[in-house]
Length: 479
View 1 (cartoon, rainbow, N blue to C red):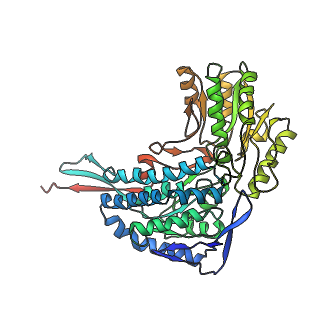
View 2: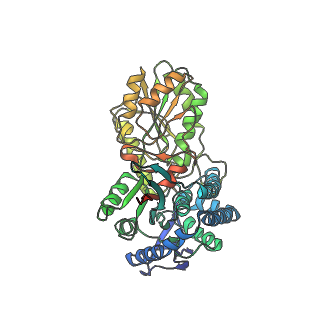
View 3: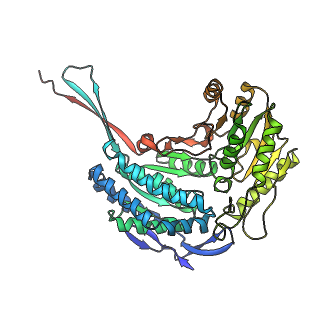
């Protein structure tokens, strides 16, 4: 069994606790590695290293910082097959999704390196004679990056890439379900020659590591991707020091299909948006609203596509469309939500059951006869389950789509630019996809509203999460 190591101040170390946490393969339920069970002492050692390294790191010109990001991108590409294998084993991704994650992670570091010459300030006219107002951008300082298990590798780059090019240092806490890819990434960091303390990795339990990081006065921003409950806990801990938080939390994305849409294409896009990463993405299509005039035809198109989804162990069969859910609790949660939907009147058109007796596999599931008042329409499922709701008019479906506590992603399928524009204006979500699958671009800005989060990531606005402004009033009038 592989024993993982933490990475603190440029060194690979075990926890002060001397204890370990097992990591399971969700396809087989077998233990594949074990990680150090990190302690508060480990966290503070990492935070001290990051704090000591931050000012020297910020003093390096951004174009020189960018060199290290490019080296890390190249290091990932050299270990490409290794990272793909790790992600398939510990998270259950299909080979296609694991490959995309690794390739995009490398590309993301390269993309963030390109901002080296684009962190800009402003010169603002003054009301006074002889005075110039100069606004500059500075790194916020030390970052606590708390990662999820559903994109464990890519989120390293999403948090560290922007932080490092801005001049920040970071302490990363990977999910205890998927730590190996992150601890292996530490070897890429070491080989890049990055100064000690700029990136640190601490493994362990979120209730210990995450809360200690968020509540520490040594942190200047805590960036979290996770559940609403995790976000609430982090905000409470950060409040003691008024620490800035950047949160990407849950979602309940609606997909709205109008009669003039390309129905077969829409059905494929919605399928891809529902079963992607085994149904475990915050911006997955979680519910579909279909106009009454096409309800029967579109449901049949969706059903044929859902019935064709192949489920299995991605490490043994590279042709599967879906792997397992990440853990037993996730499987039990999806089973309970589907059972409750059936109790409330939903009809299972396909799926609705566990696949096999070993591993946490669940069939692609399509639910009909769903109504707006059902729990399955309001609660995040985070599994390959899609409820169908019929609607009659545009104002009605906009209201229904907004009738949730989340506000991350949404999609609209129509050939009418007027319909697309009206619906987009009315939707209360950070992202809207028109006639395509749910998948954001690194040059955009991935951010939600309501309980889906605060702040965001990607693009120039993602870099600005890690910057603060400083204004200088320069008076050169001496008369």
